[in-house]
Length: 375
Ligand SMILES: Cc1cc2nc3c(=O)[nH]c(=O)nc-3n(C[C@H](O)[C@H](O)[C@H](O)COP(=O)(O)OP(=O)(O)OC[C@H]3O[C@@H](n4cnc5c(N)ncnc54)[C@H](O)[C@@H]3O)c2cc1C
Image (cartoon, rainbow, N blue to C red; front, side, top):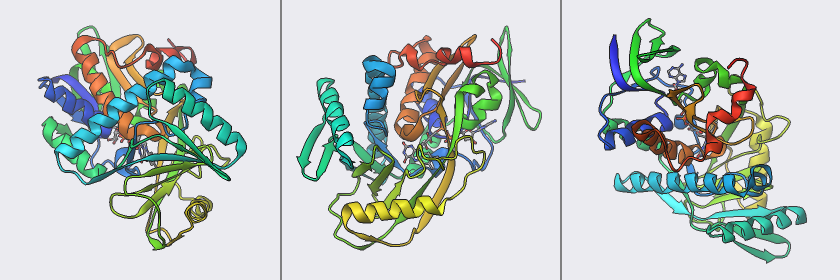
C-alpha cells in the first residue's frame, strides 16, 4: 500500500494552501487527491475578490458569537488576506488592491454601521463612517483585492510539488497505525494524517459533520460598463443592503457582482446542483446601475456554484473530534479565498506541532459534536 505522511483530499485553495505551507516547512511526503477535472471546485468558480473583513458586516458575528470569536475570525481573515496578497505579488499574478465600502440603505442599517465602525476601530481595524444625507457609507480601508485566482491555484500546486492522485476518495478508514483512504478506483493509500479539504465532499467522508453543514446555491455575474463614469478604482469592493449585494471593480476592468440570493427565499438552501436565477441577475444589475448611476451590459459571464456553510456560520477549522489525525477546514461562506489560504497555514501548523495559535477552539469541529448522529 502506498504511504504518505499527509494525504490532502481536495485541490482547491484550502488543499493547495496546506500542501504549499507544508512543503515550505520541509514536510515532503505529501499527496493531493482529487478527481480531475475538478468541475465543482468552488476555488475555480469563485468571483475572485478577497477582503480583510468578513462578507457580512461584523455586527451579526458580534451579537451571535461574542467579541472574542469575532476578533479571532477577523484575525484569521487578516492573516489569510496578507498571505494571499503577498503570494500574489511575489509571483506577479494579476490583481488590483482596493478599498471596502458598505452603503446603508435604511436608517436602521446606518445605526448598525455605526456600531460596527465603533467596534472595529476599538479592535484595531481601520473603519470610519461618512454621513452625507441620504447616504451613510462605512469605509473599511484599503483591505480588498480582485485576484486572478486560477493563476494562484496553478502556482500553489506547482510550488508544493506534491504528487496528484486524480481520483475521488470514497471512504476514510481509521486504524491504530494510521489513517487511510480508499479511492473510487479501488486503491488504498495509507497516511499518518489526513486533511479533508474537500468542501462538499466532507459530508460523505466525515458523516458526523454532515448534519452541521448546509449547502447553498450562489451565482455571480460579470458586466462591462456601457456608460459611466464609475467612481471606483480597480480592486474596490462595495457591499449594500446588509451585504445582500456586493460588487467589485475587477482587475480586468469589469464589474463582478452578486449576492442577491444570499439569505433570500431563493437562496437555494440545501441545493445539490448549481442553478442560475434570472431574478438574481436582474436584481444585481439594477442595484448597481441605481447605486452608481452607470449603465451596464447584459452579463458577459454568469457562474453558478454550490457553497457550504456551518449551521452556526462559523468556519470549521481544526482536528476532527475523536481522531486528531483527521483535520478539517470548510464552511468559509463568502470569505473562502482568505480563510482557505489561512487554513492552509493553520493546518500545516496542526500537522507539525499539534496546535495552531491562530485557530480559536471556537472554530474546531468539536463544537458541532452534539449534532452528529453518532459519537
Ligand atoms: C458562486 C461563488 C462565488 C464565490 N466567490 C468568492 C469570492 O469572490 N471570494 C471569496 O473569498 N470566496 C468566494 N466564494 C467562496 C470560496 O470560493 C470557497 O469558500 C473556497 O473556494 C473553498 O475552497 P476549498 O478549497 O475549501 O473548496 P473547493 O475549492 O470546492 O475544493 C474542494 C476540492 O475537493 C475535491 N473533492 C470533493 N470531494 C472529494 C472526494 N470525495 N474525493 C477527493 N476530492 C474531493 C474537489 O474536487 C475539489 O478539488 C464563492 C463561492 C461561490 C459558491
